[in-house]
Image 1 (cartoon, rainbow, N blue to C red):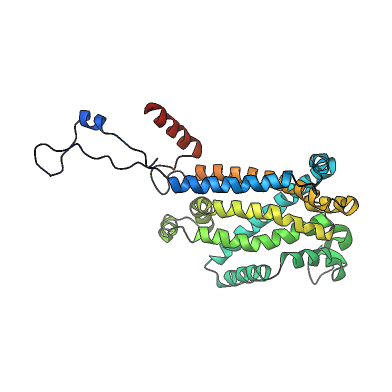
Image 2 (cartoon, rainbow, N blue to C red):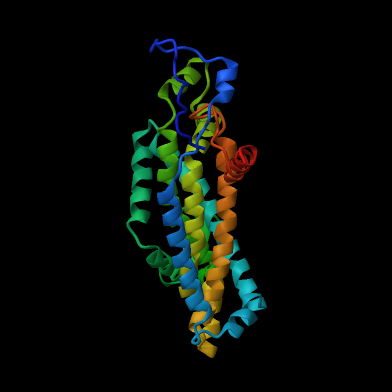
Length: 323
């Protein structure tokens, strides 16, 4: 809590030089809290605007609230929510693993590895996600069968029909995962270059290999830097997963589209899925906050910034002690 500077008691001795205060003089000082009238005014204005918007929605006769209540916890919507979470976890897992590998290649001393990693990131960052989803879903048009074996020989481990393998779920996971890996590689690369090069040199001086240096020295320090953007990318992936509905995957948005195409309650179903997206995003944001506080200990200032709850409790104790 910020306070105004307390003034010293008048110096009756006539000396204007700085002097130390005794314990009795310190206890006699009056600390006046700084008033933030502008903050209160802006806060009240925002609350008033929010309340007006909510009131207009609740009192709007064009919105059928009974439909919202009926579908909020319906089995179709909850199944769509489950599919959305599944595709988010799978796609983000691919992105984090592959993005870390690409970022390591980008910072490698091997020029060929750097060029290949740059080409991969450039290709997938230059293509819209929707185009990539359509490409993977229609992969059977150019590769009717997928064969796993050694090129140039008759040896193969198996052969599968692409139409059978490339289901909407598989196509969505591959498309979203590969696209996100290109962006996530830049997130990891920013964390890698934030590590002092002297630490890499020190690790090499004691005989650690490049892989050991990356795994034991560089990567643990990189985690602290990449945690905030990783949380943002995960939340973005949760929302980008709605694009999978265009290739027939029944996620949360796709389920709502199927329902309101029959009952024509478009706005009501959009409000329902917006609620669940809000809930999922809030849970992910809380998890991101907890991880940031855990891995951020010991960095920056020596004193960690207090949480909102601790600040509120301190203010209450301060006001009660001066009432």
